[in-house]
Image 1: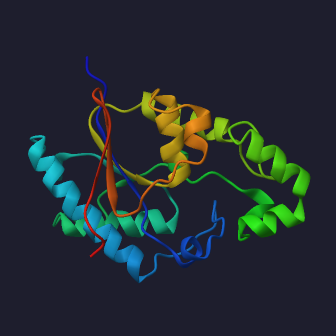
Image 2: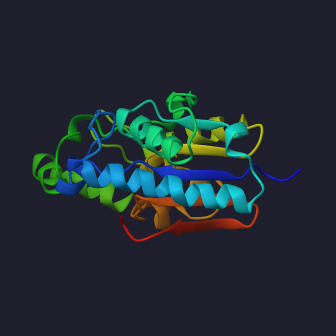
Length: 203
């Protein structure tokens, strides 16, 4: 039986993304560029679903509970002309928790705790921010989510959960995924054929 195909979208940009601040579990809304990116991703997704023979109205859609992911999902569904709120929420798709570093830039986190910061840079998959999560923990919860998928799915979540899914499915290593940039306004397709990425110029 083939593995489910996941059409995966990272939420659009927020002002904290633009400022280089760690958001983690905090609810930061999309900015104007982020809203345009979400609509763009929805347009790309429409083409991919049609290409793959999917009826968008019958596909399962699931989002992280964080507001930036939910707003992205609703803008994506609007681009597909689907009811905005007809999607599932799964807490396992939330972003990696950065604990005491949430709201900080990397420079501020480094200044606050240089030893822990250096340890995390050296082993990001297994070292957590103070009071936060390890990427290994995120990989575990993403594994539990993936194991329950009944078929091809559209997911809207975060950069950290995308990295964890890439490692879980053997598409990246912890070392290569740790600093991999996950683009906004882009649809990542996880399938038996590997990982493909689809985007268009920012609207």
